[in-house]
Image (cartoon, rainbow over all chains, first blue to last red; front, side, top):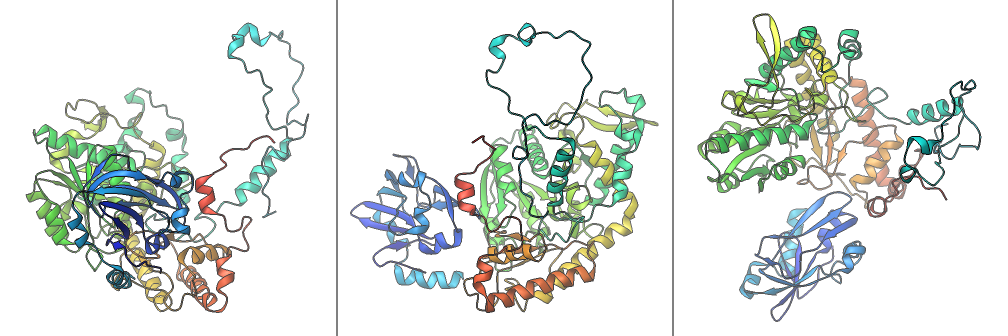
Length: 127
Length: 485
C-alpha cells in the first residue's frame, strides 16, 4: 500500500492536500485497491456545500458502488472532469488524480484527520 | 460443441428458410394500402435466414451452456439455490391451473382462490404473521410493498415526520435501494465485531423520525441476530416498525418465527425458500406478511372466504392499492404450495436443519485453508475472507474464476461489503455429503494452486468457452446488441 507524506487522511480512506483554505480531495491507494477496477465516478456538483461527513461523491467499481464522505466542510470550487471519461485514473494514480477541490470554511476540522503515519497504522488494523 | 459461440445472425445465409408455404389464394394487397407510408421502414428488415435444423441446433447448443441447479452444485450465498422438485412443475401444469384466465368469473376458479387463501395461511403460520399478500413479483418488490405499508401506517396515525429507515451495513443492497424508492432517507448502522447489529449505533440512530428498521435474520454473514428481542423493543419504543428481509428464511423454517421475534412486516422469497425457479427470469415471488395492526394496509385484492365460497376482496379503504397486475405470479404460488404440502411441517423444519448442518460442515472443513473472519457457529451460509496463508496476490475473484474450471458456479463474492475479499457460501439442504466434499476438495486444491502456480490462477478460467473477461471494459463500454458490419 502506498501512502504520501504531507497529506491528511480520513478513516473512510480519503486524502486531503491543503493549500491555504483550498482542500484537494481524492481517494487513497488503499481505497482504490479495495474497490478494484473503477468504472464510474459520480462527481460532486460545482458550488455545492458539504458538511464534513456528507456523501460528496460515489465511486463505482466492478465490485460495488461506494460512497465517499467529505473529510472537511466547505464549498466545491473545482471538480476533476477528466474522471467522467477516465474513471480508471483513480486506480492508476490515486494521489495524482484528485476528485474535487473544496474551499474549507473551518480548517480546524483537519485536526480530526490522520497524518501519514497514523493512517498507515489505521490501515494495518483494517486488514 | 462446447465451444459453440455463434450468433444467429452469423449462421444466416441469403435465401435459406425454415418453411415452405403453399401458394396463397388470398389476393396480395400493397402494404401501403394498409399502413400509412410514413410509418413504414425504408430500410430492408435484416432478419436471420436459417433452416429449421439450424435454429434447433443453434438454441440447443446455447442451452447446453446453461449452468443451473439441475446440472450442478450452485452455492451462491444469500440466494438459496436449492433443487426445485419436479412435482412442482407437474402441479403447475395441470389443466385446471395452467389454462385459467385471470378474468374468469370467481365461481369458476374456486380451486385457484382456495389455493391462494391456503398459501396465505401457511405463509402466515410459518412466519408468525397475521395475513400475507401474494402479489409482489420478487424480493425487492416485496421490500417496496412492505415499506409502503410502513409508510401508510405512520401517515394514517398522523405521524408524518417519520422519514427515515435504518439499515445495517451488512444488509442486502436492495434494502436501502427499496427504502429510497419509497421516499425514505437511509441511516446506516455499523456492525459490531461479532458481525451482528451494534446496539450502541442502533440506539444513537433511533429517534421520532425513524419509520422502521430493516433487518435480515440470520444476517448476510449467516449469523443469527441474538439481540433481536432487545432490538425489537428499542425500535418499537421509539415508535418505529421492524421489517424482516426474508432472504435467509431457509435457515429458520419451523424453528423460529419472525413474528415471534417482534417483526411487524416480512417479505418471503418463494424462489429461494420454497423451491420455485430462481434466476433466468424465474419469475420470482415475494409475498409480504404483516401483523394484525397492518392488515388493513395490505395491497388489494386479498382472497377472503365466506362460508364455503372464496372471493377477491377489494373493500379495503386504507389499502396501499395494487402492486402487481392481477394477483401476482400465480404459477409460482402453485409450486410453493406444492412444496409446502409435499414437505409438511416436519419436513420444512428438517430442511432448515440440514441447510444449517451443511453450511457448518463446509465452514469447518474450509477454515484451515481460507480466512474465517468471524468464528462462530453459522446458520445456513457462511462468509470466508479469501485465502488464509500467503496469497501470492491471488484474490477472491481469481478463486471464483478458477472454480469455473472445476465445473462449479462460484459462490457470491465481494458481499457482504463489511468482509474483505468476501466469499459467501450457501450449500442448501438438498446437497449430499459427497457433493459438499467434492466442492470442498476443489477449493482446497485451488488454495494449493495459489501457492504453487499463482499466475495460472490469475489467468483462470482456462476451460470455459470465454476466458477471463475485462469487467471494467464490460462495465464502461458494453456492446449490448449485434450490429451489422
